[in-house]
Length: 225
Image (cartoon, rainbow, N blue to C red; front, side):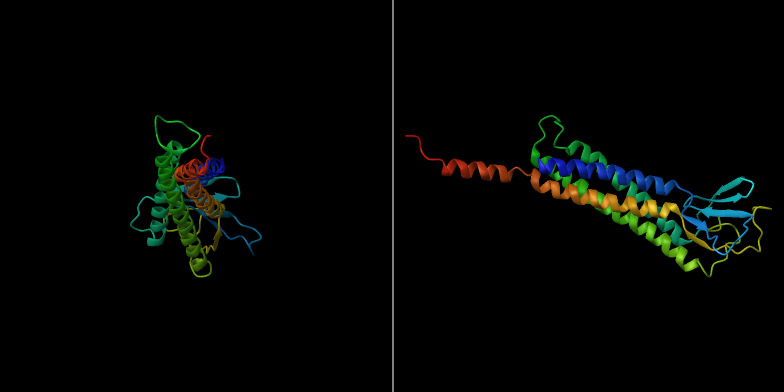
């Protein structure tokens, strides 16, 4: 019973973690303009993994995707790869975990096979969580390094291009952590915890303990008179 509960809880956390990592990956607010010290700001810029946006005080928002990967920093491309790999691993792990649930009866699948599948899904979730946390942390480190020294003259990581009246080429923007970073960190942590729970559930799903107890009970049973 404890193994089943642990497995289901780990599966639910894994689903939640994958959803959070997906949300973080597609969000635009990985880095947001630092408004500290700016009393009046005509424009507000923020950037994500796939595009960068500029929002005016009038409410108009202009988002431009990164049309090429050749001009992007290598770290940004590495973050993209880490998040995508984490999503692939997490998605496959969830699919494997569905068929390994002990509360579901699928044909004549034995418990030891389900235990192996649960362990596999747990390891994949742990790896996915580590990759997601590594990707978000790498991007956060990029923001920290560029906080005081980088001039974002083109509204992000070189992807916005010429924005006309939206951003003056003389503007110097400092960027800070956006909401997507915290969503990604939480998603990676939830994936990691879910994977650990599934690995722990694997130990209670192996039938050898039950067989050993049954054999011991039969050996200690007094003979019939």
